[in-house]
Image: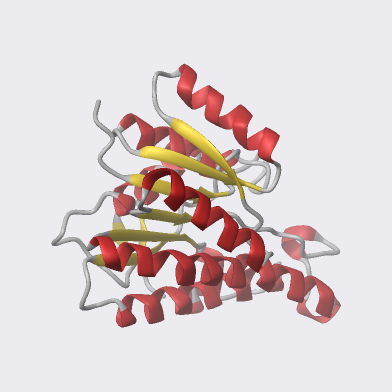
Length: 238
């Protein structure tokens, strides 16, 4: 199968990021897994290659601007382009209490670390990749958000994570507006509560289902939506 697009997936070595990589690879997309630990990224890439698809790895720490620049430069050196960007890597470190953690117990450092990864990481990657997409006349940017960031349904619990995902939604809207005149589509997705290391064993969805909408957004046709927030391939409120 001919490789028609090149995709960079942050945090693509495990969980929903890895499943997105698998599903895109089966569609003929050339996958580059961005991982902080290069060895873990290569293990994930080998699993995809063993399935008969094409996958590579690049060292990527989205909390480090130099690492982002080097990773993007390396992918462009190898392939001359990046056409799909999946901003997947994120952390959930609220505590104490995990999902029940209180805003009034939130430490400033926890909030800083969360925003560094969950907001500034996607911002860095988007700023680095969008000009490459513009030069090539094509791009799809998918931001892995969460219903936890919906202002329309905001409630208590894991406040740093919630606020970071709300901010990621704002980044999605701003980016889509600035790129509205191009063939670059920018959307956010809530994959649902997915059984991953972050979601936990009690989560209601397998990763295969959670990955379906991000993959759909990553492969939208030219008349597809931009600047939206989706779950199960349907728009949801911000």
